[in-house]
Image (cartoon, rainbow, N blue to C red; front, side, top):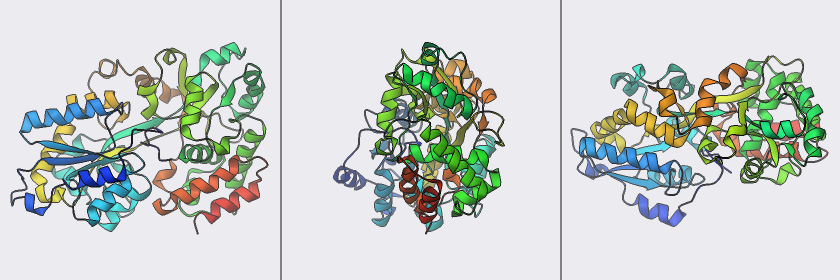
Length: 432
């Protein structure tokens, strides 16, 4: 499973054949002119497919660009699980889209270094966007060579979701702040037929959750080092973190048979009030049943004794989506510049952010008014930060080529009877 963001667990998918047909309409060098303008439609590839809750505001923005500039836009949709391969195929065929919207994850982490996309380091400055986009967002999109890989557009908030009504029903007066609290609360929640934490162990949701827990007993530098290169078995603090994860698992805190579940399963459990907690992201805010929203408090995962964190932890980063500069885009740079600047206009950005339920990378005027239709996103941006500490986001350090192997390795931690030595060996094996 690829988190669409890492944004959500399932979206309507366009088949490989359909994607290939659509890609045939992408611009080529023959469409461009010496002044960076082309009379051909601007092709914009994304995974905001029709039927996707994020699609409407995105399509509205594209239509607004045409109205403002006269430049026609042809959207190209690919599924969240397919877009990385679809884009790479288009580059190999020399038919890349002019503009690409996708997150920084797995295959895309290598695109700038291999030339599949072009760095935008200088364009951010030349086009005045360094005065618009937060430095934190630019930093998240900067690679080890100092190149900004794309124009940051969305960030994400990845909190722990709490159903307060279920805690109250179980007779628990306050939400857990420590893992000891959580273990003590678990039998009370299970007594009313509720899973304490809904989590899937066979996909990247389970991967992120596992790495979040183990790093609560690691230093920031050690977490970054181990995420980047492995060495879990030889890191005493990583082993303590693995032991803590297994302690929670053995205490019955997680979904039963978690190792066989995927994100769709556990999100459904939380939405149906079958689970009291869910580690999930802002890409799900818009899809949350309206009747559930008043009961949801966003916070962090409780931390163990001895943790360097003093509050429950969650993830937040700015790698949810960006505007990538493609080989075709460089041949009509004037049009791309107009498009990029348009997408950062305050009214456009606020509309798309509100529709998508993601964290803005730029200031939004009248935040409460702009996000009136997104109460969970508003809570995440205004109330939640004071309640949490922020963990190291693994995707910024785990090599893209090792991502799927690490997901598979972490699944062993969710298996019944897992031992810390078996788990760390599987993790280290993923880096070989």
